[in-house]
Amino acid sequence: MSGRAGLILLATGGLFSGLNVDRITGSGSTLQALGILAAIVTIHECGHFVAARVQNIHVKEFSIGFGPKLLGFKGAEVDYSLRAIPLGGYVAFPDDDPDLQYPADDPDLLLNRPIRDRAIVVSAGVIANVIFAWSILFAQACTIGMATPVFEAGVRVPEVVSTSVAAKAGLRAGDVIMSVGKSEIPAAPSAVARVVNAIMDSPEHSMDLGVRRKGEMVHVAVTPALGADGSGRIGVQLASNLTFTHSPARNAVDATRAASVQLARCFGIVLGGLWQLISNVTGAAGSLSGPIAIVKVGADAAKADVAGLYQFAALVNVNLAVTNILPLPALDGGALAFLIVESVRGGKKLPKVLEQTIMAGGLVLLMGLGVVLIVRDTLHLGGLG
Image 1: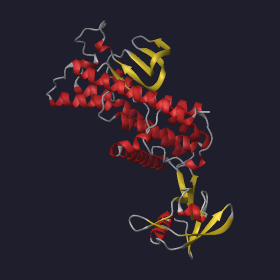
Image 2: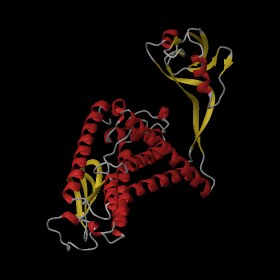
Image 3: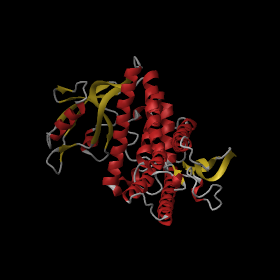
Image 4: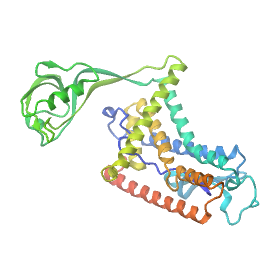
């Protein structure tokens, strides 16, 4: 355990679904997004670093990024550096140095510390990201406030499948369905379900949809196709017709409550995306994103509004925390798994060569995945523009 490496920044499918994406257009502020990602990685590594130093554990190096050194300076005991590959960072310990400057039995070497002390150091990065995410959301609650949805009458149609019966009937992306037959669609969270149920209940029966299009009302007659399950399908995506308002919290108690609720929501989004990836590896593989794609989303969020930037920062913090705690080699969760095994073995460590081989192999795989994602994201996005 010669170092604690931060995760390659990855986003699973649905990670950014909490952002108000309807307002996100254009390339936005790339520098702001890069600054946020750098701050998040730095906070993660500071968690490991501070947890070690407050316990008087020797630290060799504190680095943001991997690969060739761009900037650096040497402190009294620690080398600080900024490196070229922006896939995370690491805190290195001198325990395995061939030219170790401390006695091998020095109690302040990480490997000589009790399991509890080492577990604190390993988990501190994840804890730091969770605290940082909550602090960001608390700041949002105190300043601009959390987003509150305001529902309007109707249901929006963000997308129409080009070969669908809806497209053939004349329904267009951007339409707002205001009525189905003689029933008007109210301003309510249940509006989408109401329209979906009406469509599913009318296979091969013509429906009259009252549609608001660019300020004018038109009527579209559409006949839902018969689905495999016997219900109607027209081939559209539907979404609530709503806007968001913001109002700052009235006091610290309300801000604390709002930040905690939003933090739980962020965990729900990230864990939901992670579960999609685990339960459908092949289908969800394309939803993995590397730093380039995440910076792109953050830049768009920065251009949209300050609220989007707050949410982006909180979500990436939670994503970094959740993914790092997974019991995979080279991640914090992998190191914790080794400590659990050691505890079960009555304090007997695994062979050092075995542990180092597993951790090194995991790091190589994660680094390789990160490079692949960077290349893919660059090709798909055409750069950050």
